[in-house]
Length: 218
Image (cartoon, rainbow, N blue to C red; front, side, top):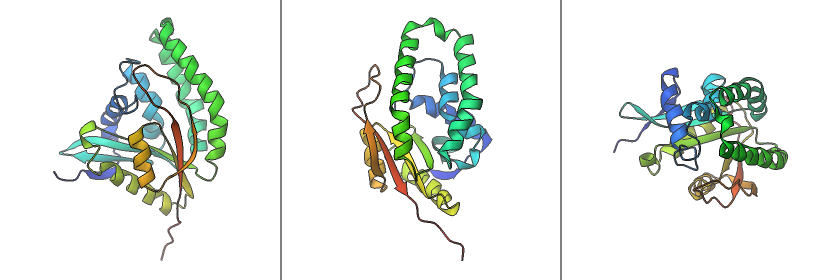
């Protein structure tokens, strides 16, 4: 099998990135058993990266099809600011106008997630001091063992080093993700219990970080 091509994101990749985000949103599995509105899920997961920081987004292409992506962010404070001001209001409007507020199960789940975020966001922010960048990496299932993830991560880390970004952090709950980033020399910064979700059994969420050396021009 020919190795997938790792390249910068192009706006024509948007639909494929959104599709993969929904296919992998539930700890690597499709989000549909938990929430069926894929448009809202994709907006939540990838809209910031495709709209406000596409230059930090990398895709893997095989046989002319996008089969994976890495959504990157150089400054997580900027992400948080723009997410609150530009994306969250759109999500709230979509949630209300599409009638999701009628579903008690969905509202209960969102309340639990919100409470978890309130509890852990401050500690997570402190643990990530010195690691301002972050990324999310997702692949179609059949390409998860082909070195594709390593290629995407390498491309983004090289980009961060060239921009003199001192460090990067990630958040992962799956055993596969923890092994992958450990092999990539990320170290554990903190861990906490995830929100229990139907049909999933993650035991711990890990926040991991990696310091980056600064590339100098010669």
